[in-house]
Length: 185
Image 1 (cartoon, rainbow, N blue to C red):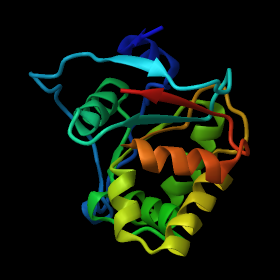
Image 2 (spheres, helix red, strand yellow):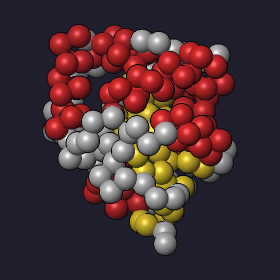
Image 3 (cartoon, helix red, strand yellow):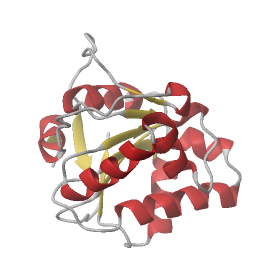
Image 4 (cartoon, rainbow, N blue to C red):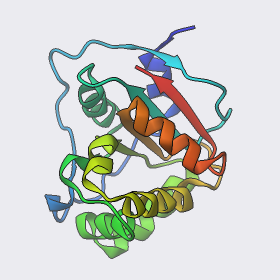
């Protein structure tokens, strides 16, 4: 049964205090204004997911609005948007990019707040990051995601958007080690 987009928004934490962005070269940004042409989509749950996910995967074919949805999610929740379309992922990318963008002291606060359900990241274009990375480098990045989001939490700590093939690979790679839920756009 299709779920309204508002159900996804309601499950995500709304970031009360946005950490200052020191360096946007790591691909992070904040979305300050809503997109005037955004149309709320219906999302389909893809398979059985965790009842209380710490990670939400949104899959869709190319050019159906994943990036627009990512921007709107970031705006609605005040969460940082991490656009991976120009990022080469590998070992150390998650932690290093967060530290570069927000500073090492904020990194600790961000990790703590994702664990308590008070902070979320919106990650767009994971499929493009996979194309830039070479096999083992992408897997190393997925291991970092696993390590950061494996622990249960009161609210999801990350929403990751990508093409269906990439999301399918992530689900297989994580193999149930992270409480996740997959939705289809």
